[in-house]
Image 1: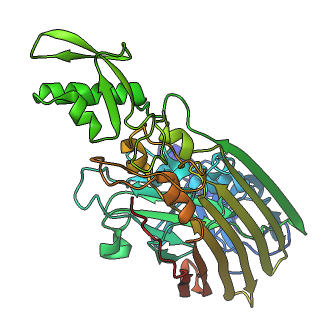
Image 2: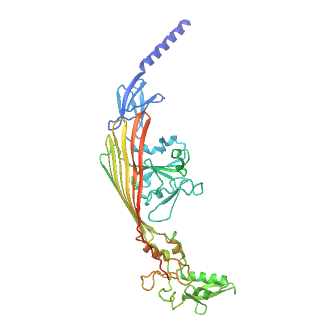
Image 3: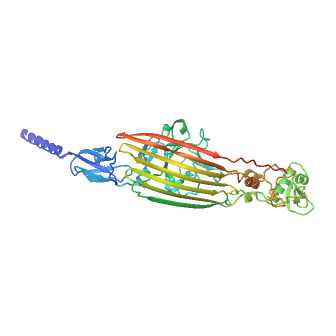
Length: 498
């Protein structure tokens, strides 16, 4: 029995020694398709936790038995399984679809699977065909809990509320981070096709690095850059969209007969003479000349019949320049709008540098007459790898915006339909008469405002230096600029009297 134990022990020692001898230190290099070493690549023995990462030159060493399967992976590249060999060189192929699984959170990047904070990632490919001048409006309905509203102006500016419209400080806009530069300005000068990725940080943990500015959430936007593999790539896109009020969205206004009936009914409800009451508004109401409208008389409990017309033989004013009319003011101030956008970009990338230049043009003729939004934006994104440790780059946008905006919707909704748009000369705009509220002709407001354009030049961007002194450590110096100069013409609108 003693000899059998010694024999088994000797066999186990010999087997263990064989294993130790078989497990040798394997070295190799991981590079991309251009032969550049991939720093931080994960190399793991398949089915085990035995692994390592590559250094600045893409080199690694690992103790495994020759022929063992190694799993090699790196963010943005296809995962690869290869047999272990001494002096092996592995080339990984880029996979841009993998980048959508990465989320930028303040000062770091994380995989979606490892994310615990309230962060939403937006797929920008679905937004590039959206007919909006502001990229934020294209996010409506795309991010849970985020509300986006707009006033319908041709500039298309969207009001963003990440944490709901009833929450604390809900009147404040979120903080936008574009290529590392913070801003709270509107984004209608930014081309949708220039956006590479977009993340919405909702909770305090995700946005903590930005401090009090992130109290209403943060939207991180990364713009496109030249990608490895693009020798010289040219992209062009065009979008044209017609815009108009639908019958469902257009508010139905009272016509002149309905307006006069409401006037007569209001007078009788107050115990007033409806004929005298209507006379103050340039109208005649007589019960002895036929039946045009009916109103309920509380005094008699019966319906009364009235005929309605202008006081002075069809005119509303003493000068007889404004005829009794039946005007739909919303119809007269609106039109079919037309939005067109064009974007041209050129990109190139080499082993040491990337470059992307783009030029975009947007023109939105508003649904309201004499309103317009025009924007021209030029962008340059570039980076250059000085050596293995230092990379310099910049992201710069120069935009010019020319917009004419006016919103006389209140006057259009409240202006009496009995008034014509123009007086008898078809040139002078009509206005209120008698006891009517002193409201401006909404079409006059739009036309007289057509030269009151807001013209803005804006320079936005940053320059940066990245230094990688140690594995897993990146030091970045970022210098940003956000400057705009507005040119507002001195225009005083005359307010006519009637």
